[in-house]
Image (cartoon, rainbow, N blue to C red; front, side, top):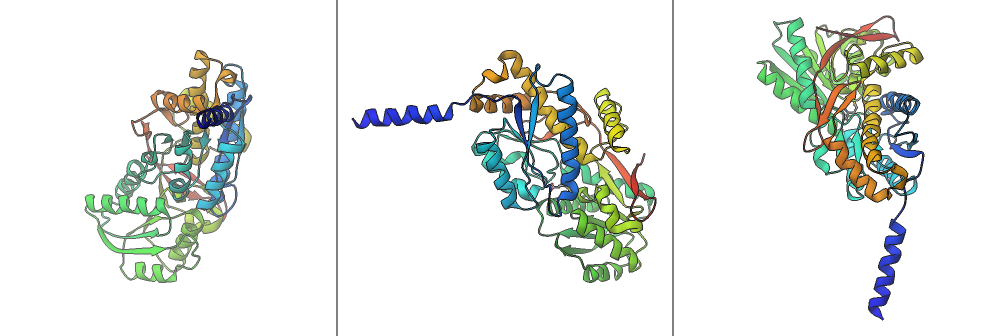
Length: 385
Ligand code: MET
């Protein structure tokens, strides 16, 4: 009797678990559409939507369209967890592109990993993200690959650089990870770190930190933070008289920062994982399509989000050749999709890419740009040689 009952229970459970993949094929986008992280999230939404539009126009997945399902993560861990849970259990997505911040990824990714739902990080650059689990990969090259390039470029501009100040947001996982790489690279390049100053991503007043920096007479300032805090920090550094070079990390890689630091953004050096001039056919198409719609070059966060969606679509196409996606069981598809993502090679706006055994991006080229302001609100990232 007991046995029959448990057998019944088991088959009821597996019945509940068996679920065909719905069409159009739902891909989850869990990025920060609100909060201070929305300065990056808004660019990601644009990139993902462009991918949906153009990949569907080119046939989607073997004739079946994809449909992006957006869940706003806001800027904190709770928001990301909530968005992931909704996408996994209510929206029944095949996989997720997100979240925006590494700080959020460390909390939300384990949920998807346990549910065996593939996640592609579109902008998480902290060390350790792909190592969260077998279902976590990323198309955003890590701080270890990006940050050193900006410092080398600063030395190219001013080979006499010697004394540097380092500032970072201590309440953000990516910023603490990035500053570690900046500080190590500075030492490797024989630069002398005169002071290390901490702040919070929620800070607006940086008088204490700026005073400490000015007291050291440094000729380079290195900043790791998010857009709002870093923008205000730069503004106050300049207003209080700092004249030297500034290197900013990934959090300063968005034109959304321009209205915050205004004319004071001018000259800030930021390393890039994407260049609008990258010569691949995939990028030329993407850049042209972006420019036609937004009248400017695509930013890195949009290109990476586009790439995240494209990787899902390309991997789904391979599986669709084996068996039409609509005939798969959702759980089985998620597992097979994750495997396919990791073994594939992709021709994307970031260039040709693949993944290493952990799910970290293997990318060919990186760049460095310098901010050039036209007026108090508008500017561009000028790519340096
Ligand atoms: N790279 C950041 C992170 O990993 C997100 C975008 S820039 C602040 O958290």
